[in-house]
Image (cartoon, rainbow, N blue to C red; front, side, top):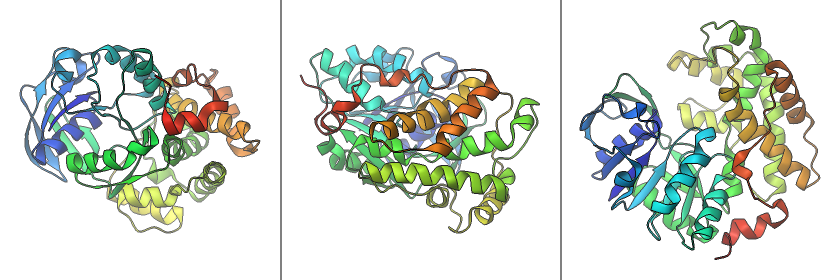
Length: 349
């Protein structure tokens, strides 16, 4: 298959290299162009997989999408809306689009844009990326880990199983179909962890210190994360979903034995460093707050479910950053009252 990968940070090239290692072809495009700078015709890959992965670097998105059998979009959430609007006129009818990871309810935004254009495509929403990777230089990449399993949902909901098989073919690991795309939004554990770490390390972040995320998961931070996670899990249950706990997600992603969070944190810190935030960059915190915690608050309010810890975390983080972190552009035009039908069938054509 030919996979068009849109986004050239670390995950996009990592996913491209993984697909190539499994016998597929990959085209790589960077929205701003900087991500593909230094890449000629191949990536030098080390880590969990190693070798040379041949990729086609596309100078424009139309060339990346031309002849693609599947499209993978991996860009930061603040760039996701603009990228989706840009590519809709160029997407071929019926070609699957995978959002890796899927932020907020972006699959419904893409489906609405396609409906306006009178076209259909199965949309896959991945709870987490298929690789954990880092860029070492222009054409050098390290694959740090491959998840054992990735949750996946789709618009329309009935496309989840064929999309899961497609993703397994492309990337190798198991993909677990979820009932609907809301499950993907609720399965993301990073907002819980990042919010707890930001609240407990704000002076360290503001001072621009070097610090390790897992090394700073003290018992107090872990207790806060568990309380936030309990509200996320309760919200998922209210919407009919059973999603992995924070501990289960860290076990899957980091490969350490599941147990008490402080014990897992020590094992993760010993396995590899994971740098924490440096500077109160609103854009970085918005990934966790705007497209995670604040979204969950909206969903909780729609079901009359109180989420006091989550609400307090959002309020305190907004106060500390001096910015509103609740404006989710990926919810544009979405009527939460129609959410069940939209998740099942997508928008009317």
